[in-house]
Image (cartoon, helix red, strand yellow):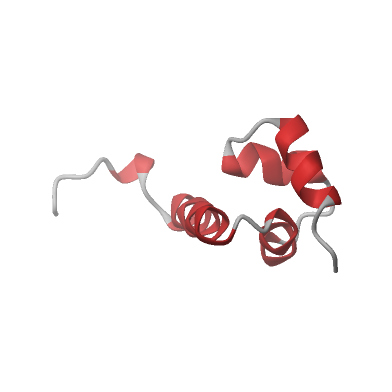
Length: 64
């Protein structure tokens, strides 16, 4: 209706967008990983589109 390609936008893309916004706003990788329900760091890295080494450094520096 608004001119967007239906296959490009849906619940999954909104989930990714929200995770990216939270990560950019806070820089807390572990929180985003928990919110997404990911057990493996690689899944969250893929979601956020960040470098694995950066993600590992962030995760190690985040206390829970």
